Length: 202
Length: 257
Image (cartoon, rainbow over all chains, first blue to last red; front, side, top):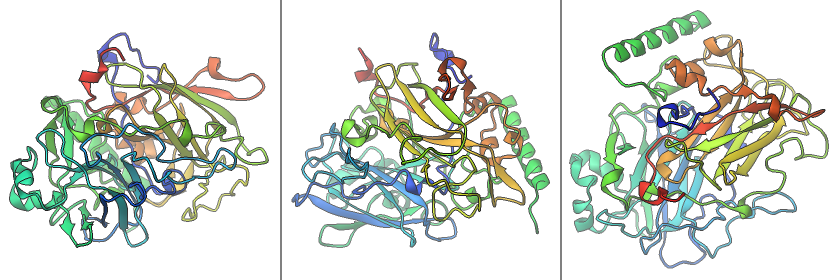
């Protein structure tokens, strides 16, 4: 069953997900993973928060991936998030000029993550957002959520997803403004104020 | 109370019976693990209790999640897909070649996309400082690889067959040998992190992580096939493992792919 017969769609069934486990830390995180915004870009924002379990304890081994549009609402098509030095094999960090839209951050020993990225622009009828994918030891299948930044109440009220949610659940998808372009977004995997997680289908 | 393998076996059997009942009652085939799977103890406080909120991607082509990050030659170096050549000396263990295709649910190849792997060395030890298993480290093996899929969706790695290793889910818990894979598709909705296993591993029935995939056919899709045509004479044994990404893609750009 590990050679997939592509002659008919009934034979093409998905490979199951598995947990990222505890030992990805020397493989997946890369230098500059949280430094998504081009250097000195005027639309830079800082987004940060904790990943918390059902007992309210922070996760020191969660991996947060961010994927978002530029301020003009366009999705980046640029590679180079994890540029490498062909001589040493080391990570070079981003080039400080291009915006790839992709970030990857491992929570620190306190369960805290942060990223500098660009304020997302709107796409279609959606309020602007950054897509988030969360991985962790103990999480058998990753979780998707979204970070909305506060400020444009009309856009948030008109958002097709947010407008479907009860107010207290909706608020888990809107970061808190801490001033100076800094926003707090905690991810609660379980329990009180559990973050809204998303499932995509057609 | 000490948690034994017998306790875990009983829980695994109960989860299987519950899945078979869901199927008999007309429930869908479950290709992925339930996040709430208590035999894997770390899942208990780390799964949401609320059901996920469903988003129909066919109603909105502008969703951020319908595009995917791009990776290119800048993000890869020449020895990234050969884990036996990343140090000055040869790693200890059985050299293997692991190759297969990255496909979407339509059976179409996912081209030019990033595949990342990580694994234990041949003694079952990860090069990670929080690893507590006292098997020897191998100074000539890190266990990290990256590559981009080719125009037919193929990836290929040369590495060392990883060893099984103990963990602390319960007393005498052992993970079957596996390689971790991280994959991207053409849409962020297709993101996948998973593990590839080797055929006929006697540890399969005891492992709550593998058994969290309760559907027999789905679990089989995590096991590579020995492929003699991939074996390299005088060098390595070959394993074939195709990967199918779930999650809706962006149909409007699939034409002509």
